[in-house]
Image (cartoon, rainbow, N blue to C red):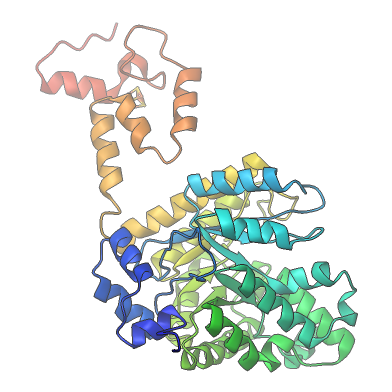
Length: 437
Ligand code: SF4
């Protein structure tokens, strides 16, 4: 007897409620029918490869809590699987719902398999990065079949979503060669596909053999994250012809995936001026018929290396408020170096703040309750309760402890000391003497 369904989308379209839909409904405080309807339409995805046994599933869609992704993986500078796995678990504990394994050194399969055995977050990969490492051959010697086989390998290892740069074609080569862009292409995977097409003279294998890829993704319920090879790498390139033409192709590819019940997310910019972000989200939602938008930033200025977790959080908050569903974290080391443990933490916290701020603005159920509890704790000068609500209580506690008030009014902090506005008002309202001197 055949399987009842292969993908969450197929199940939803057959009116079948899956255990994953039930878990997502409970986490989001929505009815399971609300979830099923949107999975069927494609406006909500539940990346959940059945071979990822340790997965605690999450939904991604603009009507749900904004999710964040953290990029990790073994590299030449960090090749210890156990150390990298510790980073993964600490990212999950800090609130990352997805981990993208961008391993780029040695035999990448054991780490990917370890992730799928042990990590409860969604696992994503970029097969084109791995192709060179997996075959240990130069890019120009790889064949289209080699690339497709790596997609299959990742699907069989249990990854929940794969970024595939299907949207660039030979026409993109002409556009980039025409030299109208300041930063050409800045997508790592996109640049590899571009380089392979340039060297071999062939069409993009992820575009040409898309139907074969759909078969693999359908069989293993791997969600396709349609990569944006032409995402702008600087403000000057934002919302240009290259980016929009690729987006139109991604819209077509979204439809083709949906015809085969394959779940799809669409990746988006990049570096974008603040005033263009909302329009970018609207255009994506229109062209890709509401498929969840996964944004890489957007970074709202080009001039803050060392602080790009902040430039991305500003853009991410506006993007998520305007319809993006999934934020890829950016660390302070972006454009500069491989992030260290502290950079990873800063990147995660910045993304969580952006996601939370957007959820409040969008009116996501219960999103503001934590803020309201924090306000109550602040009014009562109840520091223990404040630590409980803080997004990073460890840092909040450490800052207060490092600069504790000098006098015995330990209910205030050293910022205003006895001039503490909260304390003065509390005392005034209680009819008590306000002792400042
Ligand atoms: S001392 Fe100032 S900053 Fe500190 S809790 Fe009171 S009002 Fe707030």
